[in-house]
Image: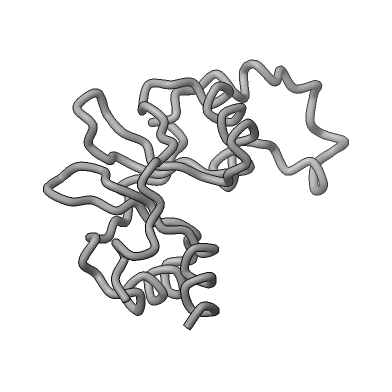
Length: 136
């Protein structure tokens, strides 16, 4: 089985110049945990996920008594390109699922954009991969 057999083709994306707040709201609205980030030419330049959001928050459990009141706007105003994971790890539609499984396992990620001729054509998530293996 190949990536093209299980990938999602209608991919929700963000532009690298979108603010983090807007993209976080898009994640919640679409009920997804991450998405590819593209530049103005449509090239995949990174991936933005809930992990990137969490990395922006101060460690409230460890330093709660030392942290002043936080301005949420200040935390969520940065552009996605300033907090995304970059460069994106990508796969081809022709890659086999073992390749994707190894990426998920060894790179500790949960989704990979699918790129063909430099352009985004899909995305494969850990859930997509598990469904494919369970359906065998």
